[in-house]
Image 1 (tube, rainbow, N blue to C red):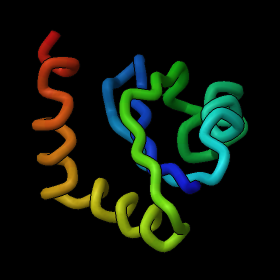
Image 2 (image 1 turned 120 degrees about the vertical axis):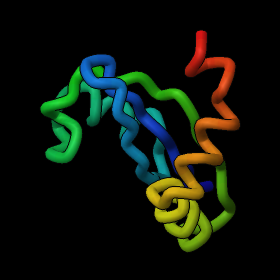
Image 3 (image 1 turned 135 degrees about the vertical axis):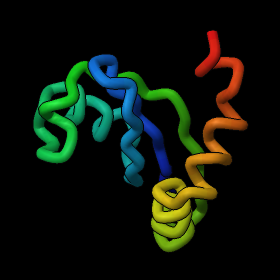
Length: 84
């Protein structure tokens, strides 16, 4: 399984999308500041993830979440979470 995930910075509220084969390990790496693209935005929360059967599907989903429509999808999907 491959996972596409969304992290949210507790500092600025911004989202980060990524994919991985080992979600727990990757989140630990982000949390410890071992990932260059998120280390300045710590602490982070894992707010969403999806599982895919193959790597290509996970990559496509990650790219989608980085588009305007992907961000709209996430805001609709996480509406209750984001509005409190």
